[in-house]
Length: 210
Image 1 (tube, helix red, strand yellow):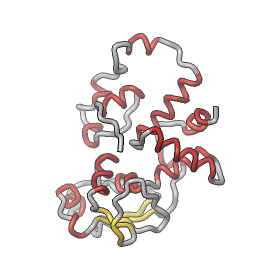
Image 2 (cartoon, one colour):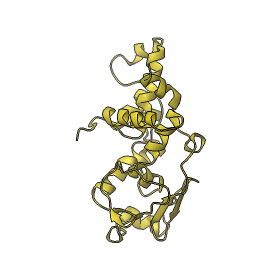
Image 3 (cartoon, rainbow, N blue to C red):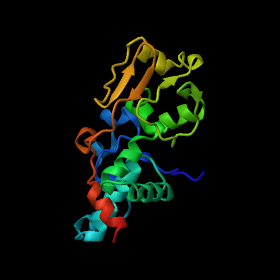
Image 4 (cartoon, rainbow, N blue to C red):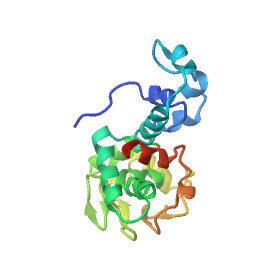
């Protein structure tokens, strides 16, 4: 499958906000957006001066949300179409579908430092859902589905530190996670306020509805 192979930190600089794509590096003084907040590319200085159109503002919000969850354009557009077909507010439906991805849940549990690492953990069959091996990062998790680390995988260095409580993790209020057993589940779907995303999802809806 096609995937982005360029410099990860360049994505944050382009959107002018931290997207937390590189784990611990994003929280250290090595974070590129803190060391150099300029836009990437040879026309970076002139592009910042230009007035951004309404279309441009909507586009940037869409790109920001897509990159935040690490999705390709086609994947992201498919999520939007599903959100449109669901009852309720399209923007909130979209966020719910993105948050229900298995790679996102594994990341939210604190088992990995980034969603990219969570995808690797899932692809290598280290994660079980309701006792069954799931190696699809986009798998949609439902309320009360039990997500856990496979028994043989609990000796992985980073995961072992979490189990031994050597690494501090912050679990969102809408999730439940037991550090001792490395099992967790979704208690309820989060509200927009609980997610605290650096994105205005209404502008994303307006982008696709133009």
